[in-house]
Image (cartoon, rainbow, N blue to C red; front, side):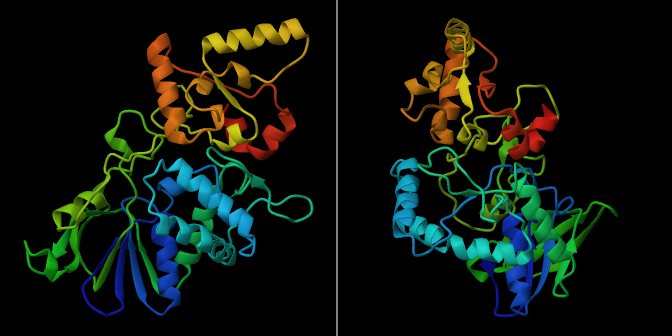
Length: 348
């Protein structure tokens, strides 16, 4: 969200995830001086928690691949997508991936040096670039290191943005002149001037009791923008990740949907029992997919989009009274799982 006040080059960005830092580096490379304000450390962002990866068709001449990606996206959006935005994002994806590579992001490659592509929900083919199961952490590492050493970027950690400063209070059209911040080290409030201010504060998953978002995802930016006169819409469009580890913890542990892309299957207790019985009767391990309740909600089963799978799990638990579902991977190659998902393997 860009809130411009003049053509001067002093830019303030609130938020240090992939959006904020990527934007800061691009602007700094163009000769602008950028201050990045973040309420905790730069790494304390949703980006750092993201496991899966980024969907992209790297070959811009691959018309079939681009068309397929666009079709998958529009289908997954259920008729609610802005087609021009979908086309723009997918056609520019290869350029943005190259930007990340230039910054130093290390995506996983196979023995031949080609990118290892994963598959996730709603996708008809493998097109997900990733860094094992810690893609966000790798991207945040590269962005943070670049930003820390850039002469045109000043990082301001442990500064909680309180509110935007309007040039004329109550007159949003007059623009924004800066932001008030609480320095959480000295417990003092300071004023940060901005000729141009960019909000990249992420979402607000912490409004819910169950979320895979970090503690910093409290919707500060959205609230500040709204108070300053920005229009908001589609606030009901909150995405819930279907698979998180069912243990009590202050920090939720997400399990990437790339795990399902490699063949993991979601079962309830009844489906798990039926599958285990069939495996015993057949004398071998068979696919659990036919026993997944998710097939009642989508022919894609466990590989349906997040909204469908999340609702399916929620509805099934309400029907059965169970407190959780199962993500079955015991029919898959163990060495492959350990290789591609070391973070998850270690946690479990």
